[in-house]
Amino acid sequence: MTSFRVYRSRRGDLEPHFEDFEVEVQAGATVLDALLAIRREMDPSLVVRHSCMHASCGTCGVRVDGRERLACDTRVADVARGKTIRVEPLVNQRVVADLATDMLDFQARLEPVGLPLLRTAESEAGAEPPDGIKSYVRFESCIECGLCLSACPVAHLDADFIGPAALAAAERIVEEPRGRDVGTVLALASEPDSAWRCRDAMQCTAVCPSAVEPATALSRIRRRVAVDGARRLFGRR
Image (cartoon, rainbow, N blue to C red; front, side, top):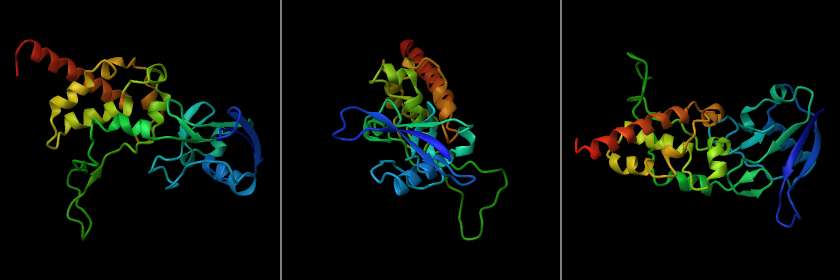
């Protein structure tokens, strides 16, 4: 049996609290498997959001023992280690109920950037697509899970900070405009609560499940903003 301490917050509760559960998990079970077992066998009122079950959709983001993770991609055996596993909702977002947060706040930060879903395909040199497929297509790596925003200490202190995911998306637009006005995106990145507000804690990259490396992208767009500002200041194109 594995012990879980799960955050609970529902309409009508006097205040948020934690509830303890003992769960029998199978070898290789994930934290999401355990949470669904709790809902199925012990408390059907537990609210936990999930969809794809294989770390592609980003909907099951939670904090496990204080660290942002995808519940479907976190094995119980890797985090239990003989202790109670603490599961909480992501921070820097409004809690809807229990472990589910309102992603509208996160999406609102991405909207001004307008990141496209596709990017230039990056395949191995000489690689040929399989029969029946004209060419490789590369989707953007970010799965919009919100883990980076939850882990960001600046977002915790400044609700107006645009956040790591949006700045990483802005950097992708600058790198590959696809007809977008790069000047508008750079202007967005240069605002007070944007690229210069970051304090390089690197937690966004540490928790990103998709290797987006938002901290690195943020550094690149910050340099581009500085170069663009200098060129405009001295009247150079």
